[in-house]
Length: 335
Image (cartoon, rainbow, N blue to C red):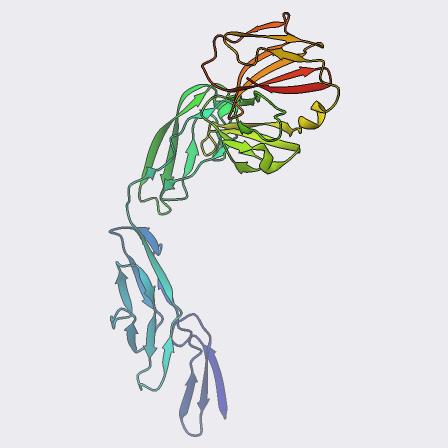
């Protein structure tokens, strides 16, 4: 007769199979072995810690770190596995791997561009804390985002806190950020309708120190002949790459002027053209008078002049262009 027995013969938690033959007095045992590693504690721990790793029951052991015992003490991070052999040396089982991580104690730092914000600056996503994964806090900070409007004007202390994953250490780093009053960037071109054929320098941006863009290109000045008659846009950008900045735009129209002059503009007369201190204007109603230097820069502007005699004594010696606007009429003289 044959007797089949099931039991955990090698105490590894798995049910094995045994066959007993009474006629031959033989017993055959088939072990349902599993090869794995157990740890007596966390495998992610602080520098200076350790964990004991134990392989399942066998006859011989060969660990990835060279150890030959069933249990090893892991004090270094890395991947651990073990080859388990039987007594006859005819069967080897390879365990699954287990990874040991050791957290190093490092300094907590925060590198942040300490450029002032303006009260009306956009909200700013904070970053730069090391090691990564910590939390940012302070007045005006919500979910890692700093809002200058919420913080208000003044100097504020912001904090970065890092708590290590294995609770090995906690560190903080702080910075000071300044919120300035709201910045209003404006553009009021001195002349928003220059004539064709003049050199035109952009002016009128505030605060001073910004950058001008004409039709999308950064330019400080243009020759209107190179662009031609038409409508364009001038943009003034202040503190383009900083937290406290802004921009403003204004339309600019380049006009032919000559075509209008060919109309009935002979009603205007200017004398003398060899100017000493003043000129006289005779003719139609003058709505605006502009005096420009030869680079196209406006040096004098009079709206709705109340007298026909115009004082130019404050101008330096040189050649100037005089533009008179009268209703729909425009005329230019060289002085």
